[in-house]
Structure formats: structure tokens, C-alpha cells
Length: 526
Image (cartoon, rainbow, N blue to C red; front, side, top):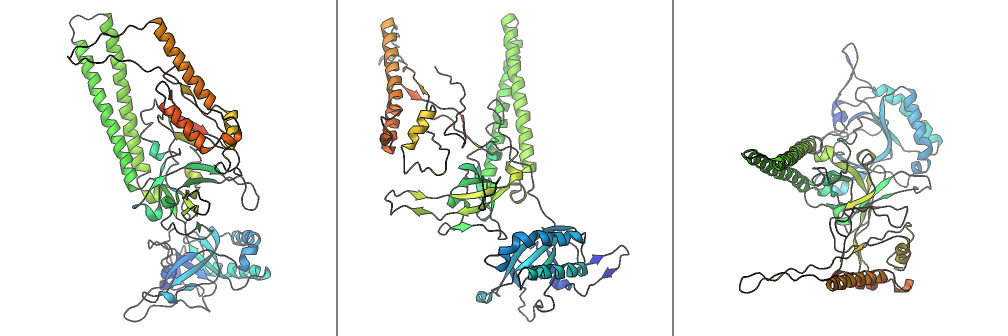
């Protein structure tokens, strides 16, 4: 928020000072400290200016009061806000006021240095923001009397109405980048600014010290009042989103937000370095393709095969040049739209964080370390794809998601049996191990052994047996057998099998509407 007018200027150029308006010192210093960066708003009017004068610093060691913004909890206003809030807004709009926000708030005034115990929490405030220079203190005074009468009618007393000059500030910068296919030269290097799982995160209070990654997204279907909700939350670790991990945290309306940002300072620089390296790598390949073309064209005896080779190499050279152009454009876009961490990379704020704990009483000794942040719709919605992650290549991976939050898979592992029965959890691809000839001690190479039909039949039989064994082991005999130990045993058997390997895809989409959905790319094997 920002402010810039110190007086109400009229078309004639004359400056008029209202009897209801604050003086210059109070106007510019009243909200000192609430933003933390010195860019606090300016006061236009407050309804208690006659009964509560704003103290001016005196003496050699003068101290300007420092305030912090607080939420409003457990007051008579909380019970009627859903009713009177819209009515206050209508009173402001009826006067044709260019307003930007109407919020309940409270302000804590800190004590002087060394006397912090003298700090005090102020009364409940109806905090109204207006466009700078658009509203006079006299107009604010008249509307405030109507607001106070409305509150008194609804049983709310002791409230102060304060007006400030403020401009609403949207989350700056474009939304998170779109995920592109692997044929795109920017596929790998843009991942740190996409909405896929694993995107690097850092919070406002720890952007220099710590960072982590996004674990998953989830959609809130109903709010605490049972009404439909379109909110989307991201989940990460508590130690990633909170500096103090020993106490529970929940953000409440009106309290300062701890913004969540995509990429801390170090990770953002690493992303830039990855783009620069990719440009250099494609530059080397482009140089090699150009040299190959020159070499082929230098042959005195040109034939049809040389012409085809030149055409193929030229196409490869064009691909490298196109990739370099795409990567350079991406680098420029990232520097322009994402370099400012405070303006460009906010994607939400921390909503809830449970204190880190260890399950000692239950005997599992599992560590609970998680937190959730509310995603900013303007930054995430446009390119949101759900729970999608680039897995890379793994030898063995189990993916099991249930469609109901009421099911605890740890308490009842047999639930996974139903998941396995409804979908294909694994693709087991069997490849006979190649028999490369061994080098003799004398340095001569042994002749490769000729593969006969019985040999091929034997390899095929072994492969089929391994596949059959894996399929048989894929489902337990009864739900009670589906324990973590059983899955560990299956993992060990498959991973140690000399004649089989388990592969998964590079991109897997998980949906909460069904136990498991997978999108697989064709395997290069059989």
C-alpha cells in the first residue's frame, strides 16, 4: 500500500485544513511500523481524535510510537460482522467515495526501547482505505457517525472508525509458468517456476536461510461454515514454511501474512545458471553440426548419401539454433518477470502449520512435520494442472492415493488392497540380462558365444516365470496380509531380481476423484 498526499488539494490550487483532520505529524506518523518497511499509509481521519490525542515526541530522546497490526477476535463485532460489514460498505459507497477496502482491525502500540512491557492493545477499529486525495476528513467524519450509529444499533460499542489513504496492490508478475513437453528445449530448466509438485518454496521470514519444496495440492470443497469453497492449498513441511516449529500456527483474518514465495534467492540463481548452461550446451552442439556440414560439403566426390547426410545435419543444426533462441527468450522472461522476490514470486501465504512432533505414545516414532499455505488464485490458477510431478527414472515406485480424507492408510494398510484391485499399480518390464564377452587375461577378446534356440527358450521361460512371480506377489491373499512389511518384502524381491526391472513414467498425474490414475509414456523396452 502507498500514500502520497499530505493535504486535500482542490482545483483552485488552494489547500484547506479541516477541523476534523490530523496535523502533518499525526497524518504521516500515526501508522508508523505497521508495514515494517517504512511505507506505512497516511491517516485521513479517526473518530476518537477529540478523546484520544496522538502523543508527540518530546525531550532529547524522543520516541515515535511503533504499531503492529493485529486481528479482531472474541469481540461483539465478530458475531455481527457478516451483517454489518456489507452495510458499512454500502454507507461508504452511497457517498460516492473511492474506497479500496473495509476491514476490522486492532493495533498494538509497542513500548519505548527498554520499556517493552508498557505496550498496549488498542480498541477495535473499522479500518477504511480510500484512494489518495479522494476523500476529505469532513466527509470521513460524516460517514463515520453513520457507521458508529449502525454499530451501536447492533450492540457494538467502543469501536473507532479510522480512514487511511491506501492503494490496493495486486500480486505482481505473471502466473506460474506452463509445464511443457520434453521435446521443448525449456522443459527441464523452467520447472522451478511451474505449478508442478516439487517446485522450490521459501517464506518471507526465511527467504535467505531455508527453503524446501511443494509436496502436494489439495482443494477445499467446503469451508468451515459448510459453504462451497474454491480455495486451493499447497502442502509442505513445517520447517520449510515456519521459523518457529515448536508451536501451532494458524493465520486469522486481519493478521500479518507470512508470504510463501516460489524459489528463495539461492534457488532462483541456480535456475538462471541452469538456463545459461543449457544455452551453452546447445551452442556447442550447434557448432559441431556446422562443422559436420562444412566437412561434408568439402568432399570432392558428392553422392546421394552425402546429400542426405547434409540435409539431416542441417535439420539438427536448425533445431539447436531454435533451442538456443527459446532458451534465451526464457532467460529474458525470467529476469524481467521473476527477479524481484517481493513483487514477483509471492504465490500465497501460510495458513496453518502444526508444531513438529514425534509419535512416542503411539509407539510408531513417526515425525509429523507439515504445514499448508493458501495459494493465490491469480498466480496459480491459470497453469494449475493438479498433482503432477516429473518422476524421472526409478527402479521401483509405489503410488497409492485414496479418494477420501477419512481413510488413514497407516492405520489400515489393507485399504491399499482395494486400490490395487481397481488399477494397475505397476508395469513390470522384464528384460533378459545381456551376456557380454569377457576380456581374456592375455588381452585378446573371446569370440561371442552363439545363441541357440534352447538358450533363447530358456531365457524366455525365466523371464516369464519372473513376470508371473511378480504378478502373483502383486496382491496379497487377504486384506490382513497387506502390511507395510509385505510391501517392503515385495520391493526387495523385485529390486533384487537379476532378470527383471520395474520402470515407471516420467509424468504421473494423481487425481483425488479416483484412487489412482497414471499417464504413462511408451517404454523404450519390451
